[in-house]
Image 1 (cartoon, one colour):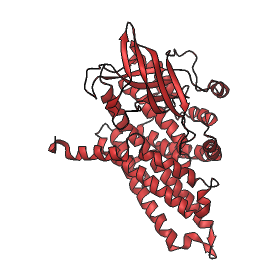
Image 2 (cartoon, helix red, strand yellow):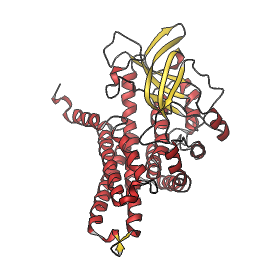
Image 3 (tube, helix red, strand yellow):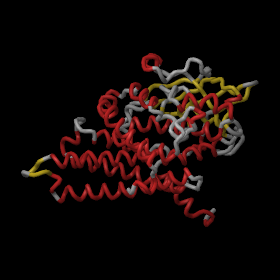
Length: 406
């Protein structure tokens, strides 16, 4: 993609910085973190030191003061090497922090955003429930007003950072009489990280001075196919006490706020999926250029040319979809349809590309000796998380049809 179309010199500097960090720090450790399903605290500390957890937020709130395109570049570059590290930044920034930036009061922003933007603690987003996935209006978690606080009961599943994180934006039903998508309110809730020893060792991830809410707990860690170095768990509320000042945005407006957040999140996942596809192509180019069969590199065979050409062409198309959606969001233009298109196309592309990458590596592609098998496992969730491919198609069709149908 022609660099000057979307990127300034500063964007290219960010890209080169993150690319270098990913190659020198993440790449040597990614395989072990994946095999052990280990959260990479040492690398997270370095990412915090580089300011990667606060890229699009103002410096006054502890952020890096950069723009949204810079943030998307960071996710794209990290995912070329390891998707788990990319989703750690993406879930923290888009899902954990952006609702507070977008909908929080001045007091809420001042209290929580600097902790998140500096990476002092990690954040997350609680929407999905056992009975509310694609149907987010099926929320069963309830919040009951009692004096100066709400009492929350219920649980959220598949929550990134539910264990390691300390600040979460979650939804709960505050008006039991309201129809499905109405009567849901967003709250900021806090708890201690499950990794206190590790956070003390690396010096980030826990803030003892942040007031924690009694009754907010992390469930057991999920044992996943991919994104294995990312922390995913249930987030449980058992008579959780959440002060009224932790209501985020207007009462009973949580569903609308979360849809807004997910629209942006789709661009982040699209950038992650794009990075996975591009990383797989780079691995294939290196491997096929040196792997010999029939007395010459397999890259010289037409049977290898075709999948490489297809991958490269689709990746180029995906770059324009992703960065166009990001550009629209950055400039305050409508981007719902473009975000859904970018997420749909890139997630399905990265599944195709990583599967081809394993094929091109032959038997070696099926071993952990090469990263393409990890990339293929990491790709699948991109078609599921933050809105399945089926939901993206519904979003796109509704935007296309508009007022033509009821």
